[in-house]
Image (tube, rainbow over all chains, first blue to last red; front, side):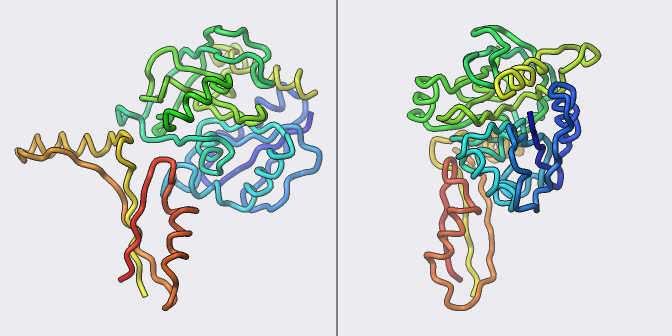
Amino acid sequence: MKTAVVVFPGSNCDRDLAVALRETTGVAPAMVWHGDTDLPAGLDLIALPGGFSYGDYLRSGAMSARSPVMRAVVAAAERGVAVLGVCNGFQVLTEAGLLPGALMRNAGLDFVCRTVALEVANSQTSFTSRYDAGETIRIPVAHHDGNYFADDATLDRLEGEGRVVFRYGESVNGSARRIAGIVNDQGNVLGLMPHPERVIEDAHGGTDGRRMFDGLVAALG
Amino acid sequence: MKARVTVTLKPGVLDPQGRAIHHALNGLGFDGVEGVRQGKVIELDLADGTPTAAIEDMARKLLANTVIETFRVETL
């Protein structure tokens, strides 16, 4: 399985994501700089990491979504390549129009940094095949802008189509319908605020995040 | 020429920062503040004759996120 991690100026979880991909796929991912216009050929998965790209200038993810490499990421997503956006990566995916809605300032205004309970609302995606439907898993969050917003019609459509993949077990940031992660209509683009790459071995205090990567390896080879 | 783009949250979109400012104004003794909405102002230096439609295009493509925000363009 061939993977890449996109690195933006201000990304700070790119190396964690690279370790998670290397440990689970057996091969180190290509690290692609945001200013590159091309991605390596034959990728099975593109991962957008957490962090504070461009210092969250204008809006979280707004500048990164317009960076040169994102045109290649959008084209790859449209061809069906799997794309995973974690935290700031999720913000970039919404700003780039690959996922609907927007991530706004947390309702309580606090930066939330703790491990939270998540309900697996859809275990049928290539990202979640190693989870059971309705299972509760524990994955850390660390964000200031994780308050998912979309209009009611969009939220109803997401729920109706099974595109809400992860839901917070309790209100963490004011997110609409406690949404923590969603997929696009083709199911090949997942954005989520929690950090699966931070729980891939026992020393991290849990391995619930590793199961996402193991599921991707099983689904994408 | 100059233009000013004012970006504000759409009506109905929760504005926790505006609410915190509202709360702080009340704490300072400013009674009668019935609501606060926070937005941003972006000032552009432009080539003379830049059409308003081009500025609106900039706003739609980058300056505002039209999922949650609206904008107003003034040429100065």
